[in-house]
Image (tube, rainbow, N blue to C red; front, side, top):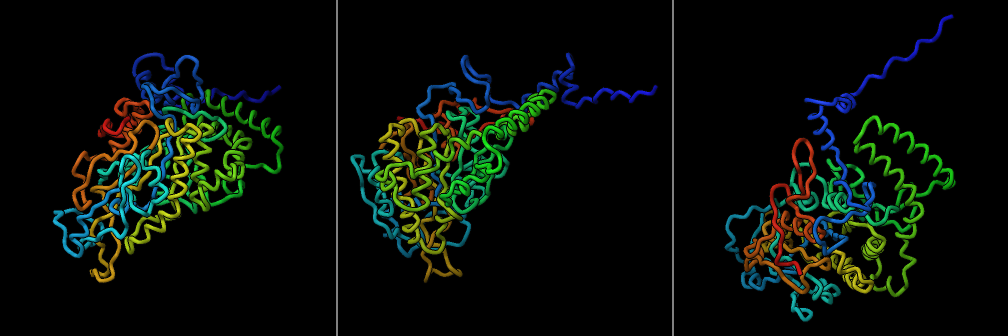
Length: 479
């Protein structure tokens, strides 16, 4: 009687072969493979093995959460946080600034059309396009000597968000969640709120790159108020929660069995975790993103509009344990005012009340001290006018300026009512206590409890870090 042939032994993959090899070159090869797909360092006693479980940083931390308000397009520092009265004296004249490359042709000095005034006990000078934020002057730490590398949006966005102009690198938020996990397993650890679609460079701004995919940012189109549109596929209308749980348990068992034969497969582990997170978010996301739960007086504090709403959502997410929230001022690149710098007043009016409310609200509920708030763009703008068709007659805008610009921080262990560094008398280039973007990243990590030189991830045979081979902690701004 014939019997069906028994299946032969399954061929081993290269990874499995190395994994079963007990000596010699195979072990060396395996070590490299495993290190390139590592999850965070082994947890301390009592900490979970879950990749997004909350983790204690290796150093004492001043901040636990980050809210990054990205003023997309390039906020003009000389019209907001860096007053330059010398521009009025040089109005219509060429500036003695030397050879600084701009993206477009520029002309003579363009004084700010906005009025600066000292505010608070600190006397921090802020222009009148941010009247509500000026009320919080004594909470702000303004870095007036920021420096980027090139006067173009795409590389500057990548530098500010990912630490490199050109190469694909993990974003700041991905690094932070890789190191710290998140305090709420029912919500993403890293959320990117951007209304009206993706910004320039799209999802690369919140990518995980070579870090495991579980640490990438979760994009939310914050222009929507309906939960079903705000978070796509958050509800499953055809399957009740109990049945979804059974399906998910089955899928997890299959995936885990698959994973056993492919140990340390970070992509597969990320998929497993994403399934679990999607299920858990059905319970908590609706509540977290629904600002109607807030008292009327709180909603009035933030004011109307998309940007007010997404800033309130950011506070609610941090309050619920989300580790890193990026809030984009969109859609598009609103602060890219080449044609008319007076449009800065309109852009500021869209978010001024909401940003001030965020700082006041975080302070009210006791979260400002442990939440690092960062606000700025990818570069600044020139103190000289950008020419239109080679002429100045109708020109009233400013070109991109990476040589000197402003970013402010608040909460999270930074000095209050403090201005650090300076640009030259015209605001063209940083000349005192220059702060490169790498330095800013090093300082963010330090405030969160990490030494940027030792916080690394091995990939392609190299230990990578957010700051590459650069950066220093700006100790002068730490309280």
